Amino acid sequence: MQSWQVFEDKCTEYLKSKFSAYASFASQGGSDSTVSDILVETKIGRVFYIEAKEERAQCGQFVLFPNKETRRFQYSEFNKTTLNEYSEDIINYLNKHFDKFADVGTAGVDIDIPNAQEIFSNWIKTTYSEKRTRFFISKNFAIVPLDDFDKAFSVTAKYRVKKSGSSPVPAKYVDRVSDYIKAHFASTRLAVLEKKLVAETKLSVDKVEIEIDGNNFMFSYKGGSRYEIRKLSNTYNANVIFSVKYVNDSYKLSDEKFIEELKA
Image (cartoon, rainbow, N blue to C red):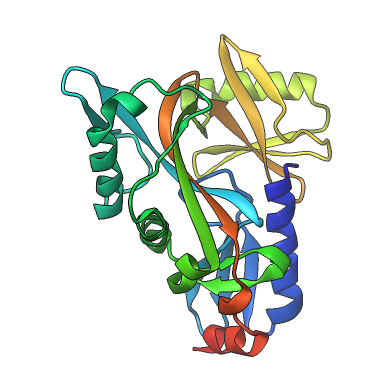
């Protein structure tokens, strides 16, 4: 397991141990960026999410393509995040400095836009609000309301090239991937749940990759003994990537205040 997965599990267990009288907490176990980390269902029927972030962490991204004919950056239609006024501010800044950003590599270039903290924080707040995230949990299990994110975290951003993400195993590969796993990973049970190929195994296989017909697939840990099999992309794109650091304890909620939020 990677450190962020360990942290997510620890946060979930912490919330269960402290606040289970008021709500249930379930780790979503995920590398799926469309869903926040911890599902919360309160006793009065409210449903929302909490995002778990280590003291230093990445916190969102979107792909931009440089068009050297128009000298402008284009927002990818395959982005999982919605184009909003703050991503437009960033695009406008990159357009004004096209030559500086057009040929970035994997090291990337810092986006030193004026009012960076405000713009980057508002992008994060807008994006996570769309995912029904109400709180962040960070260092020492500090719980911070989404509205106060900009005060509790510092935010930076880079434009850099990185390998694209993963996706569920396409239907045409399910049988071949399943047969391969059954032949090479003993006592592994497989099922297709909500169009996702899921494996149950006691083996430690998180991030283990397999190659079939020139395509790469990977076990992605989902909690307990469950893994989702994901198809890895073979493409590299330049992304605006946000990084955060937890810097201010003043805006964390007391236990009493968080309980009030769960009961409201």
